[in-house]
Each structure stands twice: as structure tokens, then as C-alpha cells.
Amino acid sequence: MTDVPVQVPAERRRVGEIDFTVLSLSDAIDFVLAAASNPSAVGHPGLAVHFCNAYNVALARSDRSYANLLANADVVFSDGVPITWVGRRAHPETAASWERVYGPDVMRGVFDASTTTGPLHYLLGGSPETLDALQQRIAVEYPHARVVGAESPPFRTASYDELHARDRRIAASGASIVWVGLGTPKQDAEVQRIASSLPVVAMAVGAAFDFLAGTKPQAPAWMQRSGTEWAFRLASEPRRLGRRYVWGNSVFAMEALRTLRRP
Figure (cartoon, one colour):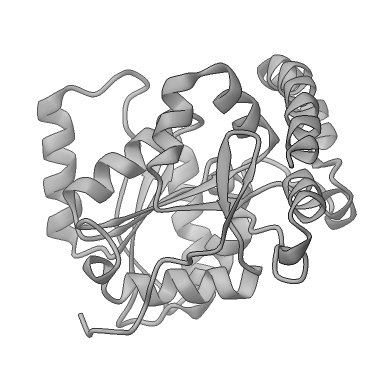
């Protein structure tokens, strides 16, 4: 890998208990691409990248261990529009540059900019069917992007030996970016574990696997812009996401007020 002048963005502002990295979407994509060309230049040895929305803020309020995990994160992007609304209001000096940096949009942007020489991608998460559909979609829409590995871990806690074997597979693949879609909060812990073990950019992108694969519907652009994407997802998966949004939105509303009242 070639050395490139890249630094972890220093502009961070707090919403709730989470310190968010303030960047525009295009700058975030450029940063990921630059970091992937030499992860060890910015990571220890790798770089952990998180995408947090209102639910993550609510979870950080109720779960101290999760809040501590994110406090040690390298990069935390604003995955939800409500985060940017509260952040710009609470920290007006950042309003011009604070945009929603949505996991699926970053994933699309990075794949679109990929070439046959890099970055090299590893997919970790999702069901076998989703992974197969995602790889087929990538091959069609981003023919120059190289996926060098993909695996769907079992739905249980992995053993030490299994994690060690996983790291060996990732290292052997030559991947420079590991996309992790294991659900919150499991994926956040995993990207930090991977980044602490391997010189890669590990990205916790959640439902991006399903959206890019086309296995789950994505909210229309106007709902994403208006901050009502959660309603679309709740209507699509009420049994799975009901508690998440009813509880999460109410806790986030309180966290938003706390943030706006801070001196």
C-alpha cells in the first residue's frame, strides 16, 4: 500500500452521549478511500468507523458499556437526519459542514470509486442469501470493485478460536475495507475488535447489506431527507423494529433536549 497524507477528522461534537465526527458526505467518502489506502497510517493498527443514529444515541444513554465503546471509537458518522438537526442547532459553528453521512450512501460511494487495484473489500454479516444477492449486485453495478471475501457468521457469540480464524481469513484475503453488518450493538463491538487486530478500515454499516442487495426496501429519498425514514422501516418490519423505534425515539427526544440545553 502507498503512503498517503490522511488524518482522522478532528472536528467532533456531542449529541447525547456520543461524539460525532462532523463531515460532509463527499468528504466522508474521500476520507474512507484515503484511509483504506494505508489503514495503519491512521489506525492502531486499523481504523474503526461507526454510523450512529437516534437509536444509537438512545442506547448509549441506557447502556454505559455501549457509551464507553463509542467513546473509544476512531470515527462516528451521523447516520440519521435527526442527529444533524440537533447537532447543527446545538453547535452552530459546524452547521455548514455537518451532513448526514448514511452508511448505505458511503458504501455505494466507496464501491463506485473502487478500481481493480483497490480498495479491496470484505463483507462480514447478513444471511447467506443476502450476501449472495449483495455480491451479485456489486458485480453488476460496480464491476471494477473487488470483493475478496464474504462470510455470514452464525447467529450466536463467536468463540475466541472462531474470531481468531476469522481474522486469519480477512488477513489472507488482502482486504483493506471490512464492511460489517451484524446489527447494533454487536457490529460496533466487532469493528473495534477487528481494527484493533488488523490493518484495515472496519465499517459498521448495519442494514446497508440488505438495502444494497435489494433484499429489504429502502425508504424513498423524501422520507430520508425529512427524517421520517424510521416510519417507513417500522411499517416494513413492525414486529422486529417496534420496540426499537417506540423506545428509541422517546429516549432520543430527551437526549436531544439535554443536548440543546447544554451551555
